Length: 278
Ligand code: C2E
Ligand code: MG
Ligand code: MG
Ligand code: MG
Image (tube, rainbow, N blue to C red):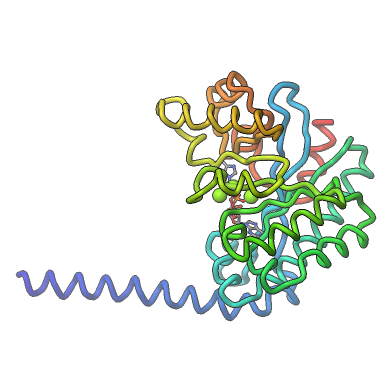
């Protein structure tokens, strides 16, 4: 009996492995062609001012529509794109596309529109991020203030000095910086001290259980206070209920983003959303 169980376990394990391996391979091979085949699309998730409910901007989130795999989540393919170096070309495309879109929001009458774009470490290490950002803004005919760049710890941890210098120069030109997933890093406060960012995005892992978990609530409150002390704005991500909204408002968080307000949506859906909310 033990023997057959063992064999079943073994077979199950094998099947899992080969499924995953096949998927990884499909992703790796498919990614190389995805840009030229126009399989990427940016979705936009609204960001609102917590007190007025005013729409302040949106985060651009990449989606990959693969002919066989369907919609592949960025959580699956971004790490593969980073490992292969393709993220630099994909990142350039994201910047170009997001800047063109925020120009449309401005033209549609949205006051002071801002699009937030996620960056990867490799764009700093291997690509010319300053050139990419400047080109995207110039090509779209927008102001640097309309482009917010989201940094994660994995960016700041690698080539810290070089990234610091780049961020400083881009900030001088008027670009806006946010630390994404704030609080999840190893030395978030160190980065806070060294990087002159404009906003902290409180990671959804702290926001999610804020109602039931006193520790999470204390952490969120503390992040908002630190930000205030440093003259930075805060945005909470992963806001899923009205109760969470109310608590964040009480804590004086500035902005919110999450399923409770709106899911990420296509550019044309966002255009409709914008016209209803401005
Ligand atoms: P992120 O930048 O932290 O983005 C937030 C993620 O949380 C998004 O997942 C968003 O759809 C999801 N989300 C938003 N509201 C809620 C909510 O209320 N509840 C829950 N449970 N989730 C919510 P998504 O779109 O799957 O993106 C995952 C990650 O992939 C992003 O995390 C970001 O790190 C990366 N990513 C997405 N687009 C790009 C891109 O263009 N470039 C790079 N380098 N990374 C990207
Ligand atoms: Mg982000
Ligand atoms: Mg985040
Ligand atoms: Mg995240």
